[in-house]
Amino acid sequence: MAHESRFPAWAWWIIGAITILAISILVFSVVLGIRAGQEQVEIQRRQQIGIALQRATDAQVEGNLQAALDEYQKILVLDPSNDLAQQGIKNLLALASGGEAAATQPATGSEPAASPLSAPTATATAVAPVTAAPTSTPASTLIGYWDDAQRAVKAGRWQEALNNLILVQQIDPSYRVSEVNDELFTAYVNLALEKDNADNLEEALTLYQKALALRPGATDIQRDRDLLEQYLQVLTYTGVDWELTTAELTALFNLEPDYRDVAERLQQAHTARADELAGDEEWCAAQDEYNAALSVASDGDLILKRDAAQTQCRLADTAGAASTGTARLTPGATPAATAASVSAVTSGDGPAGGRLLYSTSDPITGRSQIMSLTIGRSTPAQLLLEDAAQPALRSDGTRLAFRNLRNDMAGISSFDPASGLMLRFSQYAEDSLPSWNPQGSRVVIASNREGDRRWRIYTMWAEEGGGTDTLGFGESPDWHP
Image (cartoon, rainbow, N blue to C red; front, side, top):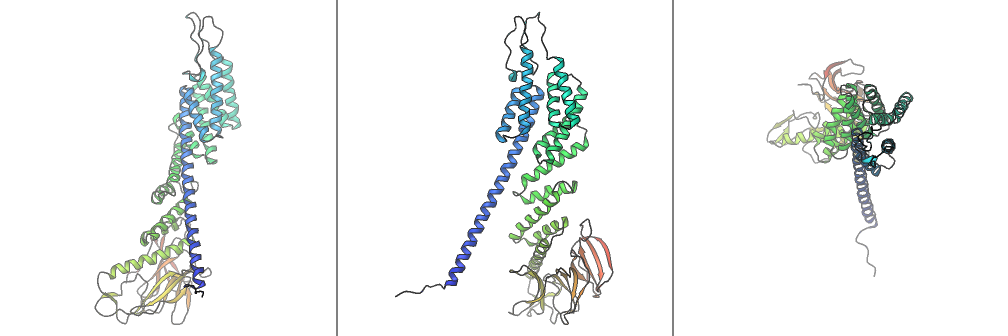
């Protein structure tokens, strides 16, 4: 006789779906981890290229051609298509050929010349008898490199100009010193800009540093170098330490808000940090991070996340306050303003009464809702308003101010639970956190509606089309009773 399964078919379907979902989440996490690791490896590789490039340039300027060649070869191992390394090796070979030709000029009794790349300078010559004068690179070669450099500068071919200028310096360090240094500075700066625009940031940083070595007082170049250096630091921390990333990005944003994608990265970093804090149920800290992200730019999804964190923060504060003693709502009290409104809570021995209003997000649709919960009863919370958050009940309990999240009603609205009448007080989606005055005729709000996205405190009349006054900069207002 066949035995029936202990579990119905639908239960197996649910278990299978949950298993597939868990596997998908695991695979997704692994992929994200691999990508983050690859990004860190790429950042380290580019940093190594920048360091090797600087060492190669330093060695070439000092005349240590073999050391320069070794560094260029290291770069090509890391990046076989690196133009700077390829051109640098060509320059070394050209320079070595020039020195070797000079060293092998016919001279009676001369000794064999040393290897050009291992020679201490590009102009090293063979040891000749005392009676023989040392040979030097022909002046025409030197002038030819200088002329080529001038033509490249005029045409904006900065890499070519830099190559020829370095050759001029190597052949004769005393040749037109001031002019050569000026042209080198110009070539370094413009080539750095090209690399910067092409997102070769480590190479650009190295070139800025070489330019500043020639002209330390160039404040505009110092600023460009400092900004780029800070930005590279941000890339190193991104995805590894969000708290440190937000600190670095905030400093960079305060220095130059429009630099590259700093504003976008700052908002992303604040959001990622807030998500981490929310995952650890540190709701108040998460709310602060979401607010910081919204101060950069307004975003509907972030607003909902911030509101949810704010609700949880207020609930946590209320629970903390209630845990210090037996708490109850004042007998006969009207519905509470919000989940964080503890002004109506007093210590006592009687049962709690009244209602609690709070905002939350629907776990299925994600829509923000205002709920009403009767205190002291086992009945579930009742839905009061959809697409709404941050409830604030007037002292007489007859009108509810709240943040309206409907697209056609965005801003601050009021709702009469008895009649169902709804009024719209403001028309800015950024307006939030309403609070009534004791008379119930005005509300105070916070908003970053202005173009600079800074948070300000406003007061307005509790009526449609009522006037609005600006009090000043600030957040989270609450009208004193």
